[in-house]
Length: 401
Image 1: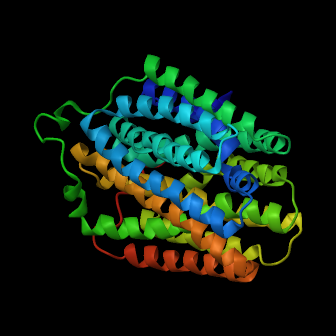
Image 2 (image 1 turned 30 degrees about the horizontal axis):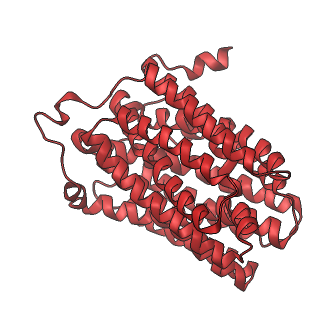
């Protein structure tokens, strides 16, 4: 149990670990669904990937609006209330998406699911920023990613097995996981929003965030990074199944591989890179994304995709904790929810455009799709590298772990 005791940092509060455990179980449920959405839509709508990409853009657009609204609401109404609202409404709409509906109702409920489920993210990220000391933020966000990816180890394998037979149960189990997490938050997570957020400083406004030009440049680069990463979970599954003939369960194993590598490598990578400025670390990670997608051009055998996922996951372990900590460190306390909302918005914007871009490029062939995706990642890496040179862009480094 020494490895577990090493993970439990006494400087982090008990409520953080409760949120961590709840996030694990919730991601088991969420990861039953999200790797297989494009396959589900293509099967249900009997439509080509270009049309599925358009539907996914509606879904992604709802997510973009959701995280922005979630950030504002978490500052205005509190982190806890937004998390609870997201979990109960998301559970209902996720269940409805799994029912045998007409295409029109399916798109409506899918869009509703796209709005309700992501409300949780900026509120939870702001709550972590509220309760964790600034010098431990990268470590805390790294632990959150480990818990999420530990759930993803289980979810896609189970989801892939169920999707080989019926998609209905993956939506049911995802809805159940959100209801369980709702109970955990309701019983065990208090409100973390600082008391003076609404008294001394006022709730703040979105245009207060928009005045931060450096943060907006960062958000633009993050959108491009997310567009690239979205290809792995939104387009690659359809490519493997529809064009190469792999069963959905194969991507379930790839997603589980990604999650295992995050759990195994997140803390070692965080320790090894703790003295590297966060924007430069993000540049290194996006370069790994570029290499990973280009690896997929080598061939169609299973080892090619397994290797590509290894490279992409190395980059992911560098990028995500560094980015979350950079935003939390830069955000004024009374605007933390809004900053996290903008950060999540940038992420969701990339995911909204990603399936449409990838679906169109894939109709032209694997070479245009994977080649351009790798090029986008290279441009993002160059942008973060230049961003790291700007005064004030590199936030404070972590204390030794």
